[in-house]
Every structure is written in structure tokens, then in C-alpha cells.
Amino acid sequence: MSLIPASERYSRSNARSYARANLRGIWGAIPYPFTPDDELDAQGLRSNIRYCIDNQLLDGIYCGHFMSEFWALTTQERKQAAEIVVEECRGKIPVMIHVGHTSVKESVELAHHAEQLGADYLAVGNPYTMAYNDEQIYSYFRFISDRTSLGILITNTGYTGVTLSPELVSRLADLENIVGVKNSPKMPHTLETLR
Image 1 (cartoon, rainbow, N blue to C red):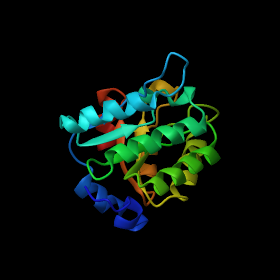
Image 2: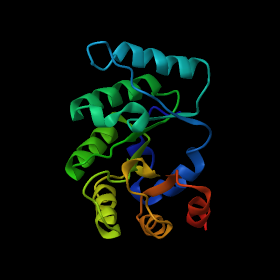
Image 3: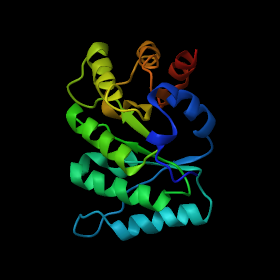
Image 4: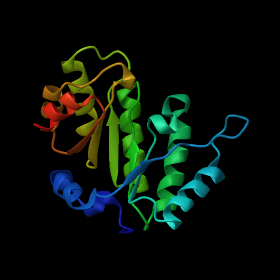
């Protein structure tokens, strides 16, 4: 694992080839622990990450999405958690940070923060409010994609109330720095998406 930030290891134009070579193995979606006062438990988070790394449980860490209860955190808390994760993983295993938000501007702010920290990849989940058709959803992903050079993994899950169609996933895959999709719908959908 290189200490050089991903933004210096690959460019937007070669994000896919970089991901093909390096986005491998078992990646774990980690939860964020909280204190009894409903504050982010920074020490607990550090301890959990060290445990995963020291015991060689994961090849990469995915953070900031459903397992991390991102909807319950302020943008500042999300940034704080990302800082901890990247700091603990630096030079050991790669990190992918979910930056989806109800505000696309906040998503871009989180994406830029992740870039500055040295995250390896971003993840963007389906818009979970006020995106009712493919054009709106495509615009959401494109707005974020156009404003970062990091590789983006689409997380397609019905938990948001919206499932991206195989056709929309295919269209999104044409964006230059989309490097993959985590597809959670049932097998027929996944097979059609793969096709």
C-alpha cells in the first residue's frame, strides 16, 4: 500500500485501469461506534480498524454508508470519521469512502475532503430522496463524478427506495471515473446488469 495519495497515483482518465489492478480482495463495510452520549467513538473506531488490519481480516475498508449510519451524522462527523479511517489505514490497506448525501453539494464537499485525506476511492449510493426518474439520478451521479478525479463505486441498493435499472447502471458506467458497481438487487437484476 502506497503512502502517496490516490489522486497522485492515478488520474481521472486512468481510474478504471487503476481500479482493475488494485480494487481486489475482501473489503469490509465497517460500522461507526458511538458513545452512550451519541457521539462518534473515535477511540472505538480506531480500535476496530486496528483489529481488522492486525488480524489481516480485510484487503480494504469501505466506510460511511449504511453500516456506518451516515444519515444520522452531521457532515462534520462524517468528515471526522473519514479522517480516522484514512489515518489508521494509511500505508496498510486502501480505503473507500461513501460520500452520498441528500445535497449533491454536500456530496461534492465530502468527495473533496476524501481526496485531500488520501482516500483511494469514493462510493456513491443511490439518491435517497427527491430523485424520481433516471435523468435526475443520472444528473446526481454525473455532478459528483465531474467534480472528482477519484474512482467511484456505484452502490446500487433498494434501501434508499430507488433501485437503479441495469440500463441506468450501464449509462452511468460510461462516466469516465466510474470504476464499478456494488449491485444489491435480486439475481435477475444483477445478471442483467452484468450483461
